[in-house]
Length: 186
Image (cartoon, rainbow, N blue to C red; front, side, top):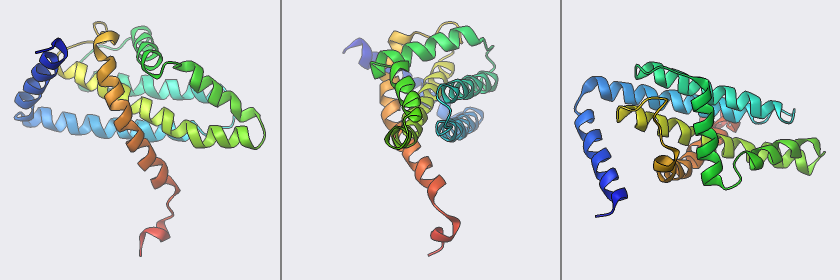
């Protein structure tokens, strides 16, 4: 059995024990809703037409999400280690990390195509990343970890898995925000 499989099995076993606890189940449900709300906020901020200001606002949303998750799990919060973890996860998995987001953000200064590229691409990329980061911290907190002892290397595969799920969540949120109330009553 590989070490990754053993880790996954141990995490699944721990999750099964926690699933039997009603308080744990309620907290997990609240954490999932908190993450989804922050996915929508980050996606909305990604269409701000001011390059680089959007990235600062998105980072603030992600930090606030983790701060709220930490409070929910009774963990202390510190901005510096969280920033480092976010940079390590996004940079290590996306390959280009902040470079991609910066390029998409800066593309907004180009009239027409650049603006369209930023507005179309950023919400899904940012939403997926926000979702994955939130899920990484929930898993880490549920395993008893803190802000200070999270290992980027051990969470990269889980982050990538959650990033793929996050793309679906972000796309659904993006579609839902474009749907007019009248079109839902048919």
